[in-house]
Image 1 (cartoon, helix red, strand yellow):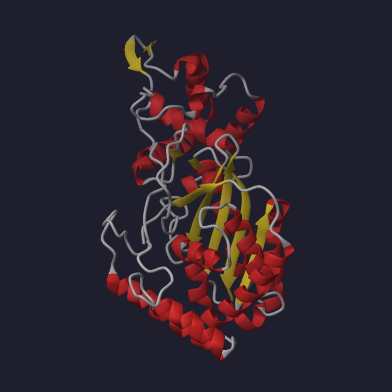
Image 2 (tube, rainbow, N blue to C red; image 1 turned 180 degrees about the vertical axis):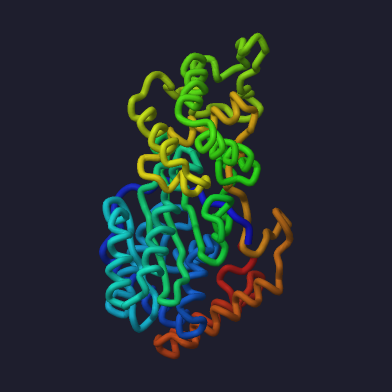
Amino acid sequence: MHRGVATFTLDYGKCPTWLFERMVKLGREIVQVLIDEYGPDEFVKRIADPVWFQSLGTVLAFDWNASGLTTIFTAALKEAIRGQERQLGVFICGGKGKTSLKTPEQIENWGSWLSLPDGQVSNLVYNSKMSAKVDSALVQDGFDIYHHAFFFSKNGAWAVVQQGMNKIERTARRYHWSSDSANDLIVEPHKGIVSDPYQRKLSTLNMTAKDSGGNRDLTVDMISQGGYFNLMKDIQVLRKHSSHLSKMVSIKVNEDQLTLLELAPREFKVHPVMTDNFNKSKYLDKILWKICDRKPGSYENLLSMKGVGPKTIRALSLVSEVVYGAPASYKDPARYSFAHGGKDATPYPVNRRRYDESIEVFKKAVEKTRFGQVEKRKMIENLTIFPGQSTSPYSGVY
């Protein structure tokens, strides 16, 4: 599975009570079957797969491309396992809005209740906080995080499902993390891809990309070796010429010609630097003094420091690129993919073997539910009827 994020339309309104109650009931049955069959660690791992997460969300009756799938589906799962967490071995913390801010506290409460080692609990809290920071400060794509859910098992497997909102374009984007793949919390840490093709006006500053490695390394060197006063000299270059950073600019430095960053239209239409204000900022200066004084030994340590946010990262990135020539990546990490392929062979032909395997998995899951035999038989019949068969009411429809 490749890496990336998912983009959806932004929903408004409230989920009807009658629908949410049914989502909780069906979700409870499905979660129990999956954990009985595969175990809690595998369930958490699958939550981190955006294709699997999306599929299960649509099974529980939500539009496949709606932002509400993330928030309501997560809330339904949290409610579905309430009171059974210890038995199932799976725990869900956080949620939408202010509830997301309670994630660390909820992780610690579960850790205390389960008598987990302090080190394991601290590690879970750290991963939760860092995933939120990475997707708000290192992936600057115009989406503000408003939903953060942290799934974990007693064995230490964890997954993050968080979502950001772009109010201008009225779209939402979901970010998936997994302990199975996020060995490095800074360099391309996301799990899975699923996204529609789209055109956005705002370009992404992607400091998690491997191509941004030189920029990250130089940033750490500037802070650790150069010191605050040398860094501020470079910041002054940005402040002096911030109004011209949207085009090719040349200035004299020690009688040598220095070409500033070229933000060509072929790269993107709009970038935050074009509207950024690098004039005197006491808060930015205070944060820069703080990080230079502490001298973080790595980019991860830099990001983890309190007060380091999107603007600090953007300023340091621009200094590394504009003044010292270490480019950052402006490629959006979102991609376009299917679970089984497309009937027109786009992006690749349908993988029939994988498709049949998926059907068998769901057939086994249905058999293990506590539904009646009549309901089970109808479900299995629907799984085994293919378009084109005369017994299907959807014959010939794709």
